Length: 430
Image (cartoon, rainbow, N blue to C red; front, side):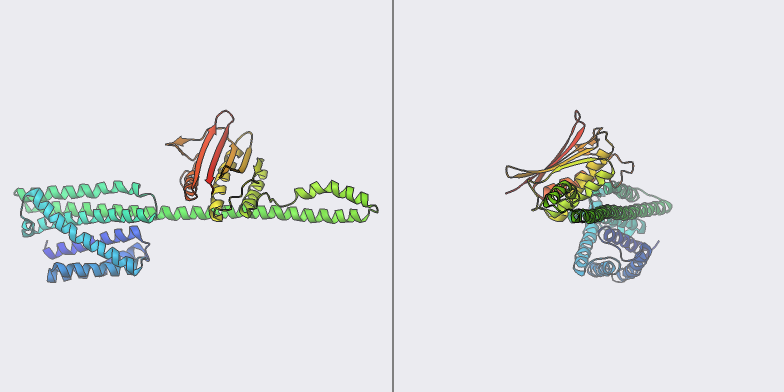
């Protein structure tokens, strides 16, 4: 194995590191295969340039340029961000080589350039440095993702680091053995091949995990679209219900006009109107709050509760929560009432009580629903009881989030005696 072949493999590994790094942070523009192919076109000529000059300044400059080009061509990234990320990878690559070489010299008590005399030892030393580069680049990617709040599954990603760390330890043991004892050429070749296979397995484990994470994200998006479709269907049911009510109202009004036209005495007309007024009032659209969003959402759940035989009572005239953004108020009320309807529909009493009160510079949003069995709790968090738990059970987390955004206090408790579930949100008003 020649030194040029080792450098070629190192650049291929650096391509995989860049691929994993950018894939973690940004969306790909192209397929995985085409993204890797473009990377090979960019990175492989760079190995020849390094072999030709063997100058660190030239190497760092070329490495920066190919990473910049790679990110711009294959990933959804702005030029400014691409420059920053390329500088980060350039600095990481340089620093890990320096740290790795001096770490090996300190651990093995050998001159820092001793490994250059043997191509197999050079391979193992280079692999150790590149593994350190890979580990640190992935950790930085996790930090960037966490800061950007792109997802919250970084904890599930951390166990993957065990594999590259153990691989790096194995490479160090192989290198130490080769440096301190007389070993055969076959041993050196075998250990180099083993290290290469370990490293490739480590990288592809990260790539495979990222592929699964992207698929999971896509599934979550599809489930969100499905929930939005179901929500829109509920609103269509409301509109259909109101349309039917209006048609019946128009039909009744026509009959009332015909009846009124037959009266000769104004006393009889007044008496007739007094009899039909309660019926006319019952057909009007729900208008219990000055907040139109509350009226619309309440109308939706009146229809849903009627369909499922749930008795819904409400008292909303002392506060209207108008200071809360409409979209956030919609999320809050829908999440609370969705949970209430789901639990009440499975209970014996089938009741929901919704109220919004203004008390001592505070607005209290309260929902009490019948619930025959106590909720499942873990670490003070409610757990979903649905069979397909994936994608569910986020309702309470969402409510906590929006309570915090609106400077509110959120609480819930279950009354075992009354078999009722209480959900309260207290908004502090000025």
